Amino acid sequence: MTRSLATTLALAGRARQTGSVLILSLLVLLMLTLLALFSLRQSMMNERVAGSSRNLDMAFQAAEAALRAGDRLLFQDVIPDPVATAGWYHFALKPAPQWNRPEVWDGNPFLPFAGIPDVAQQPRFAIEEMAPIFDPDGSLEAGAELPPTVMYRVSAIGYGGNGEIAVILQSTYRR
Image 1: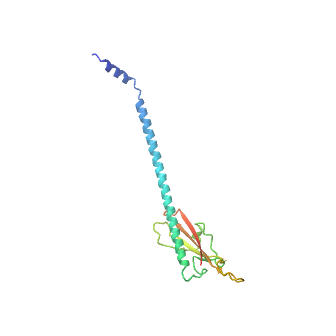
Image 2: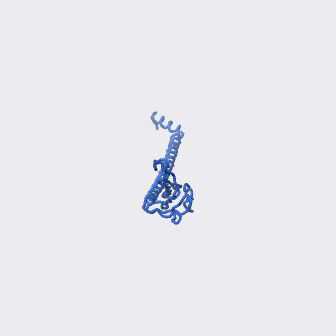
Image 3: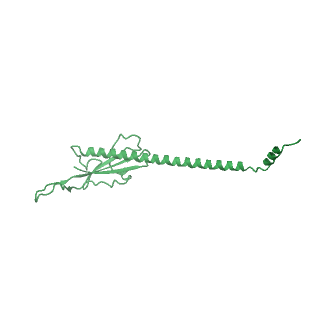
């Protein structure tokens, strides 16, 4: 049997192959797998950040709604007795706690606010009558005493969807 020169060269070339294409293919496959895992991890991190941002927005909106409810309650015609009413405080007779920490809200009386969907806890608020200040827009008569102005602070706390995030808002009103 005689072989042609082309067939002999092709067979000789096959005999010299060392499997480099297989190794190169495996390396490319490994790189693609690592790239896919990195993309998946980044996507999961973005999902967590978006969820936390949504919880923060929910907590802020809940606290804002409770703050507005306190505002409406404050500007009714009749203000209740702050000593006898839960959630109302007076600077001298019934001092309010420092509302700037979420754990303070669990141990003190507050006014509840309901109707916010999808939050872990419904928001709460408290109203504090502050020490009177003198109104700079008061009497301009010489020797006349400036009438005191009653100031109120409304504090509210709102919670996110999972209960891990709480937002505390405060607003001061002159009445």
